[in-house]
Image (tube, rainbow, N blue to C red; front, top):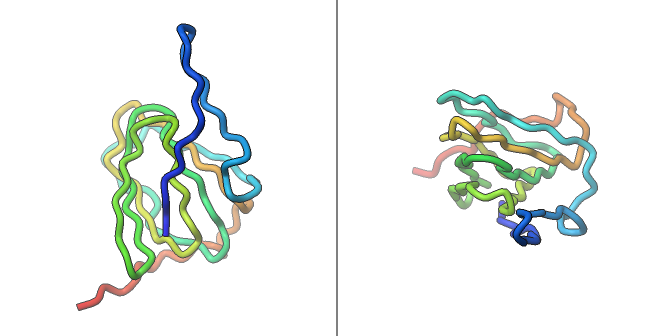
Length: 124
């Protein structure tokens, strides 16, 4: 299931410096960022292999995550808050603030065959 990592941040009178070093539980092969989002929903998938680390480096957004047994909602509203999304985690991103920049680090290079778009079936 997805979980939050708090990234180490150094703060002094000059500002803040957040470090992403030796805390991401995978080797990073791909980095992308999402910005300029209107009221659209992004994501809406899970993966066969890819693990992701999502950091809203500016503004805020919400990520709904489910692994078929549990559903959680995460608000990414600080650049030192990192959400680790496992391959089994079906997720969607929404409620982007106007200034939001969501950076994602991924364990695999892009491969369209790695995506699973179907949501998990809801229990009745």
